[in-house]
Image 1 (spheres, one colour):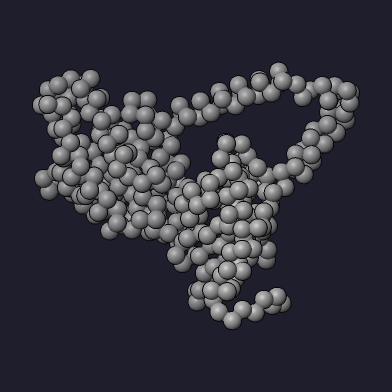
Image 2: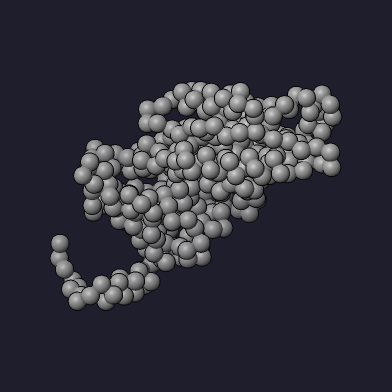
Length: 339
């Protein structure tokens, strides 16, 4: 490696590096595979329109801004590079900007340090803005296809880009978003439904395997909920389900996912949390729920089961373990957390 700079102290080296990162327009990133943190340059935030430092310094931030259509391809490329199947990591894809639009970038990176077991200890790279080139290329391909099909003349190709077409596309996109949103939410509680939970858990298991992160699942239900329904009626029961789901949602992290599994049963995915950490969080939730007054005459308690994902687990195996632990909490008197 050619040495352009040879500083006499760490502070001088840091000052030079930080000054360069402030000037570079590309988005430079530095991933520590052991601490699971990702440091990003100011240029990375500026390129995507975010305020510097506003996003979490982890891989979830990166994965969550990748366009859904590009995500499987990017993850395949990344995993092939980490495993040594390919020698270079370079992939083009779209990143979500702060205003909701997507920007085409090319992402290049290299592992600069490995652990004794061969896994990546540190990887550095950069995102480079190629949006203008990609848009020109995409437009050219579209126009060539239209001309080859004989459907449109060159004049009609230019005329296609009208305000009316843009408005129709925007309306269609809004409808698609609305449909996707409604299909992923429980209609009563407005939190994630079972379908959304299963898709997210599959994704988080892949992340846990990819980055060697802990991943824990918690399941809970409302103690003796049937008696509450029988005594006060289903409308009151529905209000309790909504109140408890919002109470829990307000007391977990943004990266955690709360979903309604069915009836009065709920599940929480805790990415990057060990069983002990998730147990403590579930215990905190148990206390908050038990102290919450649903109405002047009604209060409820919940029982929890908590289990950590083990590499190789199927979703069925993981869910069976956590469900068995919930059953133990019920058997031991309810209003408990068992893990």
